[in-house]
Image 1 (spheres, helix red, strand yellow):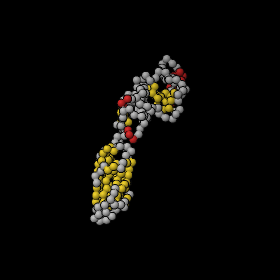
Image 2: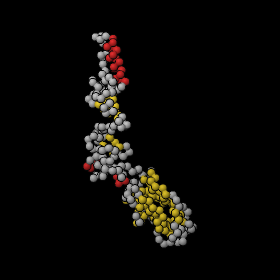
Image 3: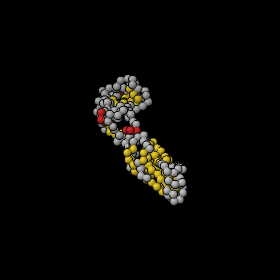
Image 4: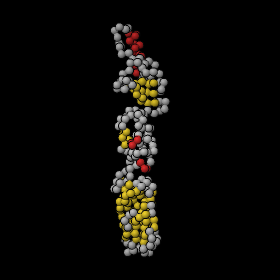
Amino acid sequence: MSQTFNDAVPASTRNALEDLTAIRNNFAALKSCFSGPSSPPNPVAGMWWYDTTANMLKIRNEANNAWLDVYDFANGRAPLALNCVSTVVAGTGLSVSGSLSSGNVTVGLSSGGVGATQLADGAVDPSKLSGYTAGSTYLIVSADNEVKVSLTGQYVRAKEVVLDKGGTLRIAFDLRSLSGGAYVYARVYRNGTAVGTTQQTNEAWKTYTQDISGWSPGDLLQIFVNSYTDSAPVLRNLRLYSGTWPTLRVVKD
């Protein structure tokens, strides 16, 4: 296939047949995107070339000094963009400066940056996500079923959640007493240790909310209930909220 484009047509120094041949070759080159095993001669900015050796569609850059890969037909994909300066990873707040080919970033999010800006072990895991913050913008966990606990004189676990990350959580739940006038109690625990305010009621359903900080990934967030009478406490609608949605953060090695 012709890769030669003749800019000097028609020309008064040639006969009509020569001009028609040159025009025909020009159209053939355009039609095939200058396809061939090597780059076409006399390239210009914005010019297309289908490299039949690499099976790659390319385009001439604006400075007219290099060919840029557009689509890899051999593997059916667009090549990774090179020389992406100050690329922002959407939704993460991470910024990568420099070229993707400079060694600062490997493919995907397996390892970002170097030294102080590198993800610690080259993988995305819960510990690299920013923690929860106080607020009720996002509902993180909803455990709404009713749990009735028959007991007297001691706190017993009624609900439990394993946390995927730490920070501060807004914790809400409903509590009621089965016997009118008899008090029942509920309290937030962390890994079996009380951390929340003791809540009590001798009425029908009542909602309690408290912000508690100091949570870590893997912690057990628990609600314990108690009654010093024969009345059974009933718990429902455990809700965990966060003011912000956790995002990927950069940690040091």
